Figure (tube, rainbow, N blue to C red):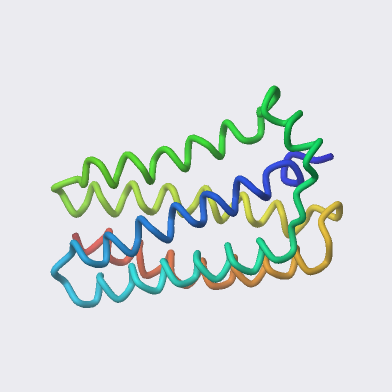
Length: 150
């Protein structure tokens, strides 16, 4: 099993965390364009999590074993912690906020690109990951534009 195979469920969890984060962020910001961007990010992550959840069937025995050795999940777990940390401590500086968001989204995009290339995944999972990467590229460009303007 490859690193990405063992972490799809973690990616679903992180996508759900990202959905909650961006929904909350959309409510916090006053700029309507930024709020709309955050809503788009939340929607893309929500759709991804729902679609991947329909394709991934957890194996009860394998899941119990994974809790003892979670090397791939630890890197992904750090991404999830970043969302939680930003929700708790919303950076006052928009520039810092956008920088941290761009870093998170860049790491996730790279991870999903690895899923696309990993032939151990079903064709459907790889297509869903590719569709998300395409959406994420556009949204991340908008996020970086906000970062430059902040």
